[in-house]
Length: 105
Image (cartoon, rainbow, N blue to C red):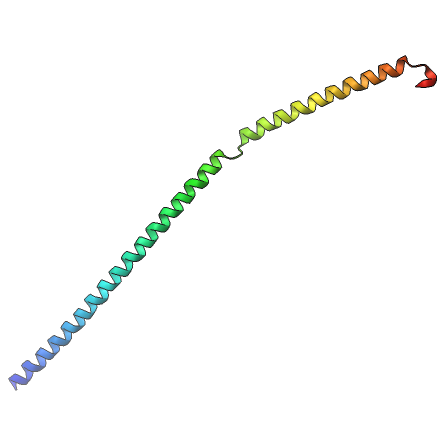
């Protein structure tokens, strides 16, 4: 009977060892899968970091408020110059009309 118990105990130990080996194998594959996933995530993070850097560069090099202010000043100067030319032409035409005889105006 003692031999039967030892045999049963050995079978039980073998079963426990198989379960432990299975858990270790599962643990190993899980760690491997996580390593691959982490490597992919690192690549994605690197790619996103590069994209953010590019967007920051474009935003910094793009049309900014100081550019708009400069363009508004140029526009306003052009409008003032055209107003002065129109004013000059109106004065010239009015002066020319005044020199005409009343029947030709």
